[in-house]
Length: 347
Image 1: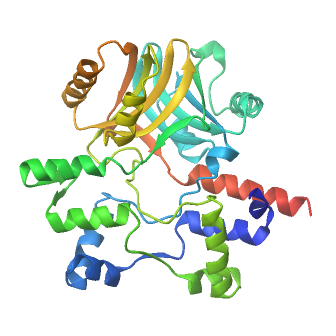
Image 2: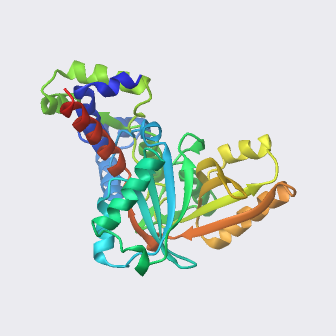
């Protein structure tokens, strides 16, 4: 139903929804669902947001994976300075960037593009505009191409289950500066699954100068077409909760295993998974672990369960301290803005 994206009002509405405008945390509903006083809930929610344990609620723009079907993962040799970091945080194609030590490379970028030709043109402009140095003064990037239409699993919030397991095993756990108790964990679980989030159709309607019923009707159409997903909160670092390690893994599977794929789909350590074709590697995993030691134990368990399945494995361990920028909605909002601009210019 991409015709819905050829409508100016829908695009303006999408821009607001994906920016989180008109979305509120419904304290009254949370207090009823969790059977606790509204003021108690309010204080816990305020602290989770203030300490950046969870992010503001938004409508995820899932259509982005069709509109930008090319995921580019680039190992780059770039100046480690404020100018480069400013570009990384502003560029509409860069979803996230990390500092790494990978041979000659010091940065790892995750980019969304409409196709290979657009990507190559984008790369050329970076040099012309002086955003990255010319090749004669840096090591050329090493690039991995992945299709966003080859996603095996997409559950960015699934790692909450790891926090629940920690709570169950230890009686308590700490995320960032917040020591979680059962109530705070239940609030997180609610918001990360979309429970207790309210859309203020009146506020959005005033912004767009349309009736609230029109807002509600159009949102329902966008949801049914899976252009957006229902509203929820996410972790600020998208793939992982605060303090957790993101492991970027490319695996060589020697044969297809339906049992292993089922395990991936149910494994809370895996937030996103892709089928890929990159040399000898045919599976890409974004994994969540507390420490490298936890990862090694986890990997050993899979190797024991499937002794003949794995060949080579290539990992990058990306800690919170290595994060340069992760902006969940930047690429989505720019894609919507580009559509809106194209539509208005071609009336």
